[in-house]
Length: 244
Ligand code: NAP
Image 1 (cartoon, rainbow, N blue to C red):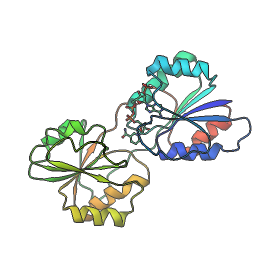
Image 2: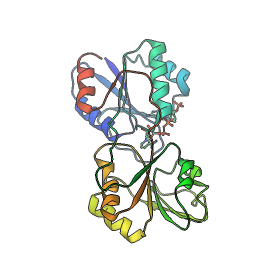
Image 3: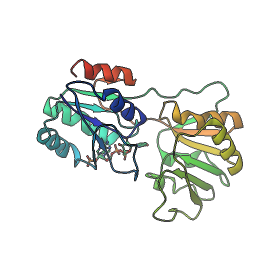
């Protein structure tokens, strides 16, 4: 069976590792190509967009893909929607691996927002704001005039920060709780803006925020496609083992 694994999350790496050496399974992992040095996977890897639903359908036919496992990040909603639509159209077994959301714990001070632009309804200048939301949708925070924005990113920036009122900060996850507490204290933050990514690795920033009494704006998850879904690597591996 030839499996197309849509990667870009820690779980995708774990699935690739879990499938290593499994008889009868030929895995090709796919990266968007957004990160300069993505994690090396123990399987064949391709990189770059497919060209929408039609491009993905063409790829599936050309490469004789038998099953599609979507292990992209919970906020990669375009890729997940395309995967579901292409699999449906090609009558291909398809599964989405989507980790559970984080839930606030006692002591957490979270405000849920639907879109990044809504951050300005809650954050009043002059606030120091840590954007743990990635660099890609930074333009959505253009309305936070008068605040100081700090955006953490993995790769070195190729261009200056898009607004005068902010800066990039380099960092490659995972980050320990102690590291996050030390960083947030040093930066003198008022707000943390985060996506509800779920998982173990990214939780440390929220634990650090709780420890420091920092307010959190949590961007709600995007709508997910209507498809078969599991929430852990073990279940995804079972699905593959069962012949997808
Ligand atoms: P997105 O908005 O869902 O995808 C935008 C386009 O990028 C897709 O339409 C597709 O292009 C291409 N693409 C995305 N994932 C791909 C993959 N695994 N293989 C091949 N093409 C892919 O996704 P995004 O939010 O930009 O995220 C890009 C990648 O970074 C994803 O793989 C995701 O898992 C990872 N990531 C995202 C976040 C986040 O917060 N969004 C965080 C960590 C990691 P075509 O339409 O041309 O096929």
